[in-house]
Length: 514
Image (cartoon, rainbow, N blue to C red; front, side, top):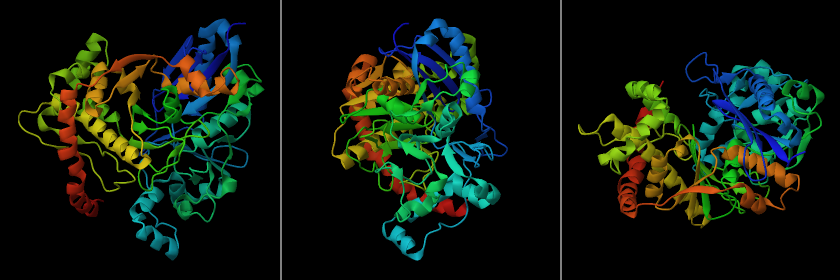
């Protein structure tokens, strides 16, 4: 027998990763499988998936990893799973799915009115919260199902997210952590339990507690791998499945962001900035701080919904030739285009992107904008302006959270596909004006999930000890302060003024939609 290993599954929007992780934060065996069809879409804006798609992929990846790892599979001490958030599934009393899973990318909306009495409606209006409450109600998939598929809603015994269902298929136990209930379910994020019926915002997605899963603490044992799951996955029966949290929460922990003064930037399909705090606070008005993987910590977060998916949109619409040339060179289109970033000056010669491709809680009427076009601008200006725009939005979120928490961020840690680019990391350091740090692996979510299991198994005394052993900073990008001053001027005098000035325009556009 060798040293203890954790088998971790990281299930994303585009692919699944299965890997073995050791106590030094290395991955001695690793498998990634890209989905041929990430989601099913019968009409624009729809994003669904077969209920057992992700479990079948998990089984396939696990078997492939077992073949690749050989005898290392004998050293597995526990299993962890971390997945994408806000992905809803309806289960009947026999725990069988009643319809396809609705993914977080789905844009369908409930059209019914907010089911709140006169007193609550007055309270929402008085607090300036009515538009946000309406937006959240319409965006909740459970409300759409109740409205459009009432027969499914009536038959549903449990409304669960993807990780909860995977827990059940692996162990036969339907339970999960508060750190995995991040989405449109009635969770009291501060207390880490389901909302009481009397809570003001319960009406936004009012699912009875009996129709929700049992919540347990992160680091606890969900259950043991069943004989049936063992036969399908190749994982030895009886191994414990350790409860963790969402992919973003595990990523933040994996980046070593577990206390004040640090922030995690995620440059993925959605771009986020997350803090780790022992004191609960709303990152912006009406937006809760999410339960972190650590049970005494929260992750306040600002999310740019479309994030680095904007680069794929750009490539599909404006960079077909670059994509062809990249293929000839055996690199990705993003890698090819990233080589052009240094040729465009800081600030993109006055071109500014405001990346509100999707509205947010604090700006439900916002639209994405590209401002400052001149004949001198090229498509490479637009490409860099998208990256700068995402960073401006994340900067705005970070500054807001610093103000609300009365803390100052001194270190930035980056993860996600965009973080693999040195040039994007340099731009980020210049824009934020503080060092940007990149750790030894791109698999920060899996690293964080594995860390939870090692601590749970007493392989480490606490998370500080786990981080010390498992996380290594490999690259530090120091800011160019001359460029930082340029970005500070653009941020203060241009970027932050765009949304307030354009709000009347957005309101007018809202009236003409549909």
